[in-house]
Image 1 (cartoon, rainbow, N blue to C red):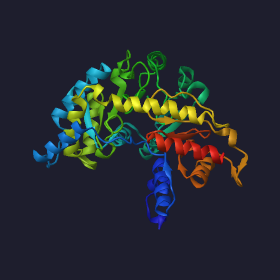
Image 2 (tube, rainbow, N blue to C red):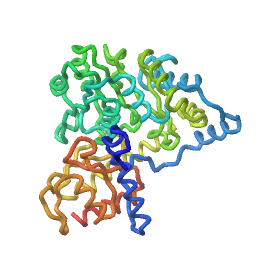
Image 3 (cartoon, rainbow, N blue to C red):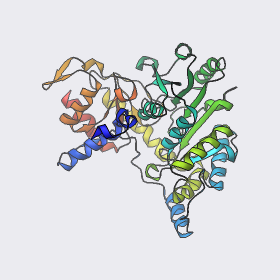
Image 4 (tube, one colour):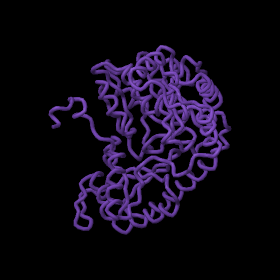
Length: 394
């Protein structure tokens, strides 16, 4: 009955990360011992001080509709967080709280893009960027990068991708899926290009900012000339292990924030009340309260690089943030493994699922057909077993 569905939904791709997670669950239900390294979900429990704030919110009867753009005291906490962590001054009228950073991105696309507007995506990019842009009738323009350049777009590549139809550029740092982190110098070089194109807006996805193994996170909105044209996107899913609470937010020029609120008011209205109250406590806490998680991710990164480095055919860089490795596995293309011909990254990811019982995600979903994404947001025992299985079957 797909002919009765809308053209927009028939054209939309299923999220590759969620599809692989669903396939892994299906195989588990069949009794197979699947190790899931496909989802970007911390394996930590939410810190107790955040849980307690949520419990208090229940007792305080936060059960009514929340303001469309978020509680004022939550927006105050977000404003203070932007000042403390990013040296950015966003007033309350520049902040919109949404049901996860994914909704924040969808809001932005729907209020900014017209049919045919081009959006530059340094590839690899997060899997949902391109589909959200296409849903808003925009045109994703991929700028390919490789492991040899640490999966970062150069100023020359950015300049070459700009056309009279370019409306926006979307990117994440630290990056999902590559874990790459743009430095101050690298962002300033990109900003120098963008200053020559004043009508291009920037979506800076900073959801992984605290899972960062460098000397510090840099927000492009803080670079000269970028503040009034940047929408800074963030949330609490990753750093605070609050994935299921679905709280994201933006800091943006007031006219953009106002339009996002208008759109959200017709789609979902305000984000869940209990999650918002808990988020106030999360954001007001010193970053040191979550350092134990960041330190553990750093340790796991080093471990998984060591283990994967022992497997011939895996080409690795050193990701500086998030909790993913994005190895180039193109050395396996054209080869036959246990009777299976590997033509591309999708074949390789499916081969690992079916033969090693390890779920990963094809790089094709992220705009890079030579790689696979492996999440190390899993316990050390699982990581060691998963890489041992992969090594055995390749």
